[in-house]
Image (tube, rainbow, N blue to C red):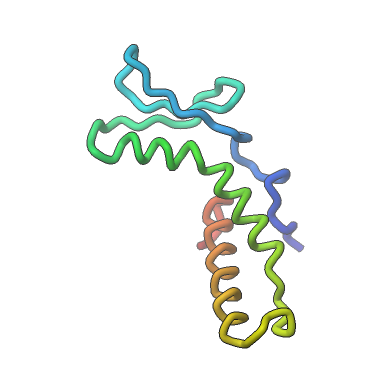
Length: 107
């Protein structure tokens, strides 16, 4: 049986990650807190800095999604009505898909 995802059993470089775009280099560099290079953007268009910030936030975004998925109840009686239950189950399914994608599985 596959273990439920947690940020503690993730296989990516641990966060937090930091974004560095200094005058000494033209790229957006993303590093781990320990200084390990995680990624960098090559293009210098209107999206490269925004892309780098999104990449930098990835470990924290994944952690929030994992937490979100774990706290949602799959019991309809925990919701005031079935419409909200269905909305929250759709959100949960979407979160699980993104978590699987981040872990290298099928989305």
